[in-house]
Image 1 (cartoon, helix red, strand yellow):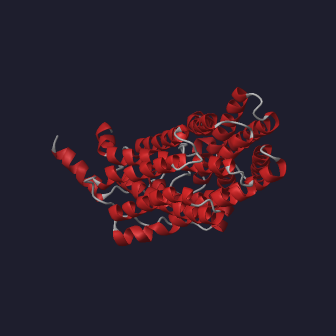
Image 2 (image 1 turned 90 degrees about the vertical axis):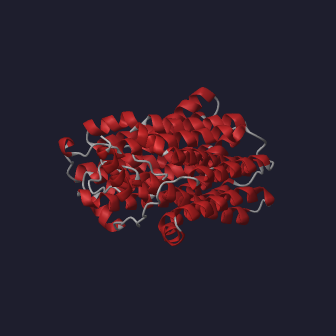
Image 3 (image 1 turned 30 degrees about the vertical axis):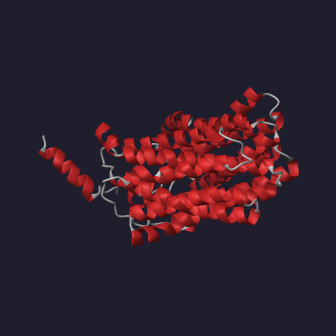
Length: 427
């Protein structure tokens, strides 16, 4: 395992640089727009364009990669993402920034497809679970670290945008110099929303509402922090803490999901997350320590809704349909991440900063109601027959779902098979 991770060090370094730069830029934009006193509803429309571009990217970048190859596609996507980062301070036009957000989302989706396909191609049936976990840990820690560098430079000037461009550009170097063979990327099959909803309505609803919650918070969390009076340093800590909480709560809740009926776990997670969101809305930033704890609980619990939704869905799927179902759940999450910023921005505009968390609490109560209805009107999957819980992460492409250890249709790449044969011959 150590040898495998070492062989992927170039990929891991590219992930760290890319995710850090992208997370840093997302928070920076929210702060900058707040400084410019742009209306929250306009901020929501501008920032949601990233999610639109990302969803489009996950659907179409495979064709570009297939035509020009992995290295060239990666270089093109990363270079464009860096150029876009440098263009924001050139003109404070909301239409211009909206177009840049679409381009940024599309390019980041393309870069992640390339990286994740390489990562997946190096996995075997014996280590894919561990590599799946390593990828997620690196991703979350990089996103949290990206928040902390928001303190570098004044968001009102050019320097922070240049730093974001540098991080994304430097991510090119490790991967472009790799000697690994490029894997073959195939478009992941998708199941129709109607078919998936008929078999696991709770899973589809959970993925969609999780996208609303997380997409809305990542886009407007910095706006909320600025509106309640937090300075740049505290805003960066506020956002970083929320991301770390999402990572830390995934494993303990995963253990609960393996011991109890998962729809009931989702019901209680939604209720506790709603209570946390309502607590933030009521108390505001009067007590910074309490704000940090409540926001951490809200984001940590909300982030686990997606992997629980995936687990609920997979429990009702044959093994050869898991990848198709997971790809559709990712698309459902992506649609939610488009709805979230627009809806929450309008609530902030109408109710003030507390509107963000009142809205989140409302969506969580809706999910709890849907889950409760499904529990009482459909049969449970016995706990003994549930698949082992795996903390799935939605901020990725559908390529990574192929590494999910629950997918028994996983096939090792020819390069990995060749590597295994060489190791066997070596002793």
